[in-house]
Amino acid sequence: MPVIATLQQDYPEWHLGRTEFSLWYLEIHAPALLAYLSQLRQQFADILLQPNTRQFHITLYICGFWNAQHSASDNFSVQQLQEHQHQLQQLKLQKFRLKTSHINSFESALFVEIEDPDQVLTQIRQALNLCSNEIAPLDYCPHITLGLYGHQLNSNEVLARVAEVPKQSFEFEVDALTFGTYHAQQLQAELMAQHYFHLGSL
Image 1 (cartoon, rainbow, N blue to C red):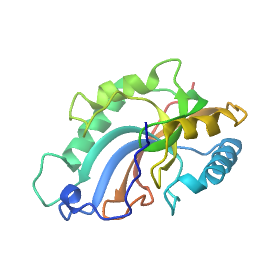
Image 2: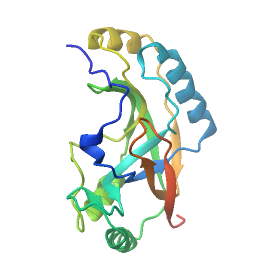
Image 3: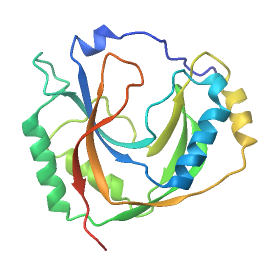
Image 4: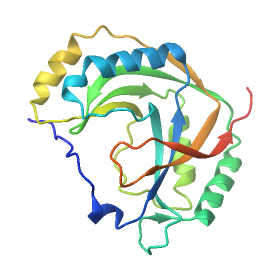
């Protein structure tokens, strides 16, 4: 089965002229993990869409087009963000730890799996879902994307290359959730943090 290549183009039928798309995500700050992810991104650069410079992160919840003037069902408002923040406050979240696992492949992207043994990410997503509907929800698989595929190739080739990479695992602490946006009319645009929700100490 072939992987799906992402085309280097604008997607006006999606953004409808709107500029900022929003999401909740986790920033990655652990130096050793960042070095490992950068090494993997370079190792697979020949099959990944370039330029490939978006920050490594873990997507938590896809919110929609931020505070857009154009009326559409996939917009996300300031009021909805405030409702999200209220729901998060109710959770009384403490700092927690996550762990990286295997390198794996979606149809359109190469990624590193994330282990969430205490299901904290699931709790967060359930809380956010109480006051908004996630955009294009899929079965949630916490991960760090290494890159989108730049051209079509057989998924077995990808998995064979992945199997040759020595497995490494990294544990890291999460002390804040980030609400941010990216420029919807630019493929793989940089994530821009708008609000931080800081977690309590253990």
